Amino acid sequence: MLTLGLLTESLFGASQTVYGVLFLPVCVLTALWVREGDLLIAPVILPIAFALGLVPVADGGSGGALDRLMGMVTGLATQAGWLYGGTLVAVMIALARRVRRVRRVRKVRPVRQAQ
Figure 1 (cartoon, rainbow, N blue to C red):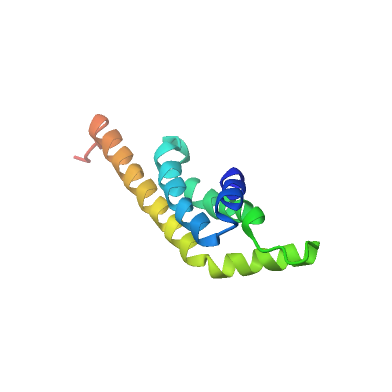
Figure 2 (cartoon, one colour; figure 1 turned 90 degrees about the vertical axis):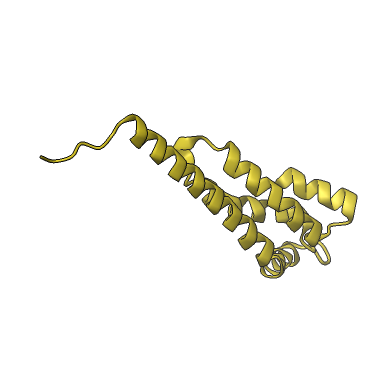
């Protein structure tokens, strides 16, 4: 996401909307590519990655550390819709994959019934 943030800054002039739109495919790909054993991790790591990638896109003001921090807070607040939407998409895909995995395991190893 940091690379995507740097790319967005250089190509689109630090457009936070473009960064948010590009975050959605990253969420889908993350939820699809994560290992089956780590399915519940994908929705947790995505907001952290979003915040990390927002660093170069956030408005830095005059360039000081406090200005950059304020730009990050403002960016997280104004782009929360993209963050929540992407995370929700990843949660839905990860849950669907998890349900499919559990059903596949149960089909291979049927549950014993008490007699």
